[in-house]
Amino acid sequence: MMTLQHITLGGGCFWCTEAVFTRLRGIHRVQSGYANGHTPQPSYEQVCSGTTGHAEVVQLAFDPEIMGLRQILEIFFATHDPTTLNRQGHDVGTQYRSAIYWHSPEQEALAHALITDITAQGMWEAPIVTEVAPLQTFWPAEDYHQQYYARHPAQGYCAAVITPKLAKFRQTFAQWLRHEDA
Image (cartoon, rainbow, N blue to C red; front, side, top):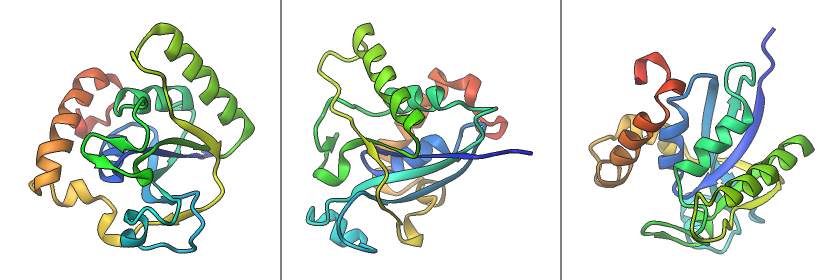
């Protein structure tokens, strides 16, 4: 019997992060949402105002027998810039912070160990500023944000930002792609 685990990741705009993780084997569900803020059931507009404290995130349900958390986090760190505080590219604000919101102490330990390893390897020139914290709250984003790239690949932001990111992602992580996304 399969037992799924969950992790919640903030890598800037959730459309980008969702587009990456929906293509991986072993990932059973990717849900865009808002995490660790202080406003209950925030709207996208409220989160974008920067006043709710939430990060745009994706919550993953994954089968650790197929895709382990370390591999998920390695892909996470390779597909966004974890060295820029409260921004990813042109998206600026606390809602775009790099974050790992863990669901167990084992996940926390693995996240910190991987950050130490990546730092020692010199993968990034600047220090990693990814927030590593327990998941306190998660609110699903509005329905129109779910599977956004899959439904709107020609939309301006998607075509200019996500499509090139996915092309690079496919080259780097081809061995982890679902067959239909290879």
